[in-house]
Length: 432
Image (cartoon, rainbow, N blue to C red):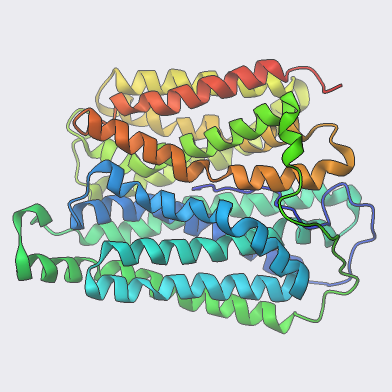
């Protein structure tokens, strides 16, 4: 997610390098897996509502990309305050606070739809994302505490598989519910009261879908609340402000943090436009409501690629694998933008497969040998996820400047992947 982003957020202790004993809370990890599933799915839903809102409000691509800007800006704005909140009230109550914030964001889609106001949609997305960030702050370090240190990597990988499952399933279901309701008439053919009525009617599927999501989140929040006193032995380290900024002076870490920014931005940019891209006459020439489900192939490829990549990362240098995947992503984009039909469609969707190992590999290479500064480095990288806000906006500006040509604007993710490939070569040898 988007993302989905599955960073090991931590201005909070309890990282995979923590040597403290596991806390005693049987069964709690299953709820944590559910949290990974939900926040992964919600992030990828942005890719479905972007084409919907773009049509309803007759937006250009710069305006449409404000969806991702408002969502991922929450990582930069809420990340550190969210971590401090969790330190103050604890993991379980922090998770409930995040879930309730997510629920509030979902409910804000109702007034946004009924008033047919794009600005309220954007505000709702920011509130929703703020809750997602708080839940992420809780989820990664919490899963590391719910078992022995020797199996932490296994548990975190398993939990992230639920994240990927969410990013695959949610957009498929969302496309059927939200894009399936696109009317035969277009908003740019209407004006005045007719346009307002059309927007209210066509956005009904959006608020109904998010209302159902709010109900699901409420159930999860209730379940977590019932477990609020089950977590024994929880402790947090004290820190002030945004610790770790000095780490950016280290070439390896600074370059890696930049690549996280660019990777999330490139992944989100492609995911944001893929439905509109595939529906173009040069590619598949089908309505968004028909091909909307194909966004699941993009995110599903990332999920499958993680399992394949985990094998190759044991056999070859992670830096070389990263460089190979980034080069592969560039090649696939070039093939897609210079071809047509099914080749153009599936080559772009296959970029998801190349994305699969990038985030965890960049993260591990950047944080290698940080030792006791690992948590500080993780916090900085979590803020770097705001690349999902900036890069898609730049993509939108370029697309608008070229007459809405999504293929030409692919130069933006190509540049991102080229820099990431360079980092893979740079970090191919272990850190000293």
